[in-house]
Amino acid sequence: MSIEQLAETALAMVAPGKGVIAIDESTATIGKRFAAVGIENSEENRRAYRELLLTAPKLSAHISGAILYDETLRQSTKDGVPFAKYLADNGILPGIKVDRGTVPLAGFPGELVTEGLDGLRGRLEEYYRLGARFAKWRAVINIGEDIPTGTCIEANSHALARYAALCQEQGLVPMVEPEVLMDGEHDIETCYEVTEAVLRSLFGALYEQNVLLEGTILKASMVVSGKGCEEQADVQEVAESTLMCLKSTVPAILPGIVFLSGGQDDEHATAHLDAMNRLGPNPWPLSFSYGRAMQQAALALWAKDTTANFAKAQQTVLARARDNGQAALGQWKGPG
Ligand code: 13P
Image (tube, rainbow, N blue to C red; front, side, top):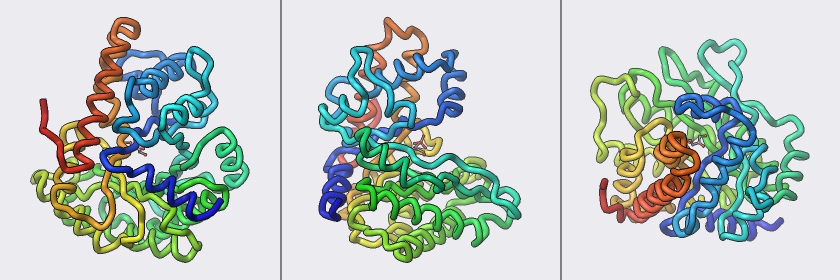
């Protein structure tokens, strides 16, 4: 796989007005989302729900790629078309979550490290054969008293860089995701400082591991106030802080940055992205790779009546894709 091909895939992921839908919840995580709306966490329900999302008509007008979970990459539509083929045939790049989740970092209470490097080369080889063209790895950074530590940040950056190098070797674009969690009472300045340290460390590690930035996408968390912080930063401050933090840490040669929603409500996730793009031109396309902020409205609707509301739920996903696609251009028309 040449760097030109990786770069082409990376650029397609952040094509103007398009972003990524993240539907890569592990079986345990989708189980929590299903439980909240009264849906049984069976393999068929997971398949049917993912089919609803992936086959929403004209999704590719605003969606460039979809991140799947291992199980979903091996599943098919009810008509027997493998999801990866369905996506590729409809102009959407299939992606895959390849990390194996987080575990406590030994010796560092309250901190996490992401696992999944052992045997990763072989798994990536298979994922490519199954049709995946990009791969996501999520590191989680907690903010709290005396955390994150430098050790936690470095351990996670090292793993992200090792995974990213393996992805490029196997022809997949790495979507590197260091998520600074919104949980906590910290203010936006603290989130800024932590995010800055995390991104500096990450890009240092990518350089050390010979990762080619031209074939890499960053999936970033926004610089926001902690959920429990009394004084919540407004949309403009979030947009300005996030942009400043990214501009001071992320090389301009990166093909694009996509954001996670991380527990923001739908409207804020869209408004923040829109505001950042209105502040442009920026060094890279800024788009979305939302999970909850793309799905939650559709899931709630579908759960009420999985048959009667199927089409309506698809229209809801489409509306979220359209709004976020407009926000990726700084052209969102606002709520309602
Ligand atoms: P959220 O947008 O729900 O944070 O999910 C995105 C994602 O893929 C997290 O890893």
